[in-house]
Image 1 (tube, rainbow, N blue to C red):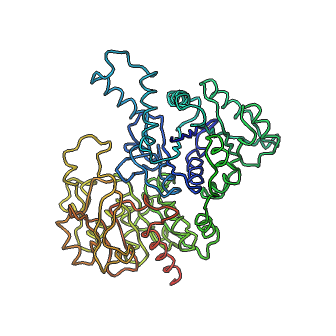
Image 2: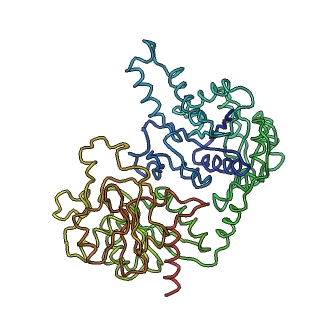
Image 3: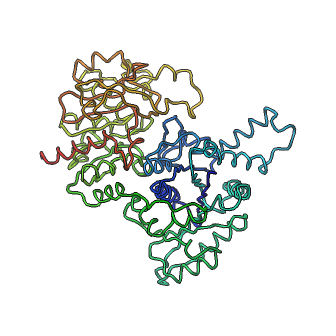
Length: 536
């Protein structure tokens, strides 16, 4: 029978439930268990696809085209296992389904209510992944903080589901904050006690407390938390601030979080966890032999979470190259023709980031022109690729009004055009070209050297594409289309012939970079930046 672990949060948001869930899953996986993680978010949006990155951070896209919470990126990076539509559910999706069922007469004239109809649908979704029999353990992270009005149905669903599953088939991990008051010189347990009390009022007793803290928990503090929160003292787990999120699995191993969970689920502590590769990665990450400076030019740079997967892709690639990657976030709007040299001074490579809309476009074009003319390694992702096409069209081909149809519907040179299947779409949510698509790479290109094969698959999230009417003109001038979708002919990768490293993809390679499999485009870009630094 599949066992279930529920992760709730208390006291404050942003404590790192996703990292704790991913770390526990990594430890259980390393012991030989088949594990997956799902996230239940309390907001009413159907998915985060229509949310501004300032509101929500990056929108993570799965292989099957689900637009999801960025925590699913952590799950994949830690476990090296793809997630899917079923791994992220929002309140909006729950209500949408229940209302649709009501309209179809599925409830036989009954009054549709939060209990039982909404909670029943939540429980059904929580168990969907377990029905396949593919997983031994399913970890469910509940978004929000215990006590929030919007998360109440999720907590009630957990209460009911625990009763239905029976003893030893589920457990609740409650992540809280144990703050340090400098004036008093001590850690305070009261916020955690109140948070657990709130959870108890909803009928849920946590089995394990994971306590975020800046200082080590003394035995006295652990005993106090155990006594007043009704848990065993060995179920009070310290989660002290770490230098990197990739330390957390080893810190949780030291705290026996995995053993405690397995004991409570009446599962065997079979095999000591095999974390050799993880430790090797951490060794390289923490002991780099060199350092490179990469500029990330984007429009959401005030919130680094908007580019979370890109940042993590650089961490994986840096470790592979035994090199520390220092990322400087540069607001695209601030880059002008006059200051571009100063803005990019000291940078060994430049990445132009994905995004939507016209804001910051000119700054991205200025940055791309500068790195193209000065042989600085360049990496473009999605809109970054489209910008490289626009810049080349304007400054090399002489198409002065070359533009994307997204930015200027009246341009006489739409070198980036709206995809044919997107032209009649009116609903904005979940309607982009989403998920994994095949790409065929031309032999003899830099892309082929990077990937080492002609057939690849990458994840997409866009509405606009390279306009193939201009392809011959571009290739004659030295911008090569080195990757195509085999079915549609869509240009997936462009590169420059006579440049040390100028590669851009219509897809999002950052979404497939994991600790176990760093993405080859990131690895090669960092290597090129390193070579550029050494040549200087």
